[in-house]
Picture 1 (cartoon, rainbow, N blue to C red):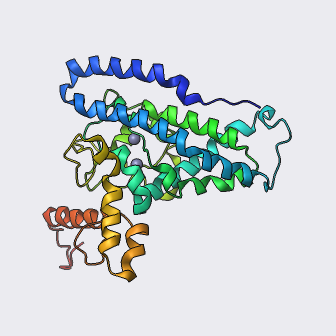
Picture 2: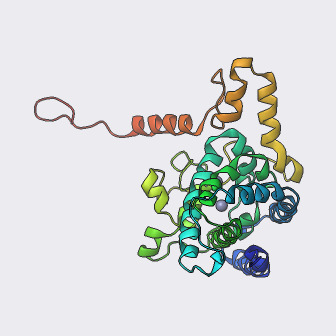
Length: 312
Ligand SMILES: [Zn+2]
Ligand SMILES: [Zn+2]
């Protein structure tokens, strides 16, 4: 049985490409890199690998147990069924879309995923900002249907590794747009810049991993618009390069809210969207978008009256 984790083999290429992009940035976009921010990103990448090794065992155990109840069977030598690989890759990417979407819409999952968004810079090192606490959410349950379909947990681990490797190169401002056909189907730097933006137009859009088609299918696609300068990061920026604060700030915020909330609202602080409060004292991304739309619409020119005096 093959045991192969593709991401670790890609690390030298990641480092090399970060260095090349740093040189590019020095001449073309000096503000793309901030050394302290890059160090935090690198520490995130390293720590995430360690956390995965420490806490990933439970997930793997759960998947192996679930695999015993699979509905379909690719056979004893499942890794030799060639068409199972692209199928697993595609379905895993669909799963990624929904895990990622939940990661933005459920605060318990956001507490872990916010790590990836906490940089105010957007460069290849941002891709290495991976969570330490993903195993403490229920995100792993999203893979259960694939295991029940008969995909071996090893196979799913490998395709998920390639998925992650793909997502590395899209964290850059060095590429504006890819060819039109590519932008139509694949996740690209342009689409993913939108995902990392805090502009109201861009909030909670483009959850895709590899294929952008899922966002188009499920109504969360937003193309990058010219003349809309992107502000990267999170709605309430960290304002610090403290690594441990960066890792745990949202967990601390969430637990504090649960602690101080009235009993009937406690669960909502765990399961509702980030920014939700029972007294309306903060804003969710939907609220931010709605008030932005109101503002921009009120600035728009009045519609011209038609012949019968009605407005068009
Ligand atoms: Zn995200
Ligand atoms: Zn990203």
